Length: 158
Image (cartoon, rainbow, N blue to C red; front, side):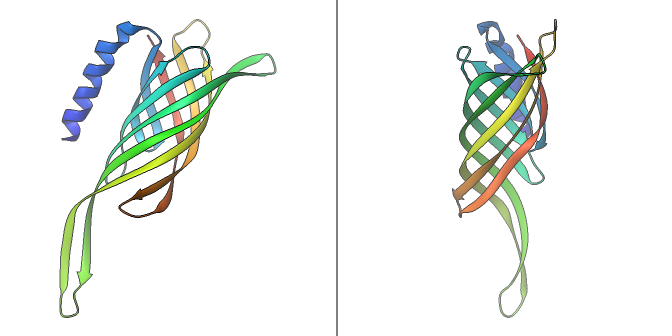
């Protein structure tokens, strides 16, 4: 299933690249992911992630606000926002039933919300954006717990 989703993502990236204002790349951290960003203008964008972590598949989408940040005559793009995430995690537990040990395994679906803040830099004379981002998350299905994301990445701008 993971292979089919990655193939679908590559096809979607290719088909929508001609739409303009689109960038695609990789995110390395937690979770590792293929990323797609569609700019909605100078001040906002929509990000999509198809990723994986140690135990499963991770899908997320965010709406972000963008603004210029100039430091020492170098222009960066500061962005912040949030969205939702769903992940599918495989597990194997050994459980004591009171009389014997039993192995339980399967897949859990986690659903939650997340926020993020990031900083990006556009390479001069090249259609490449380098970025770093991090943020908190809250998973509320199947149970409530605090999560987080963070890492570095690069996007190619079509």
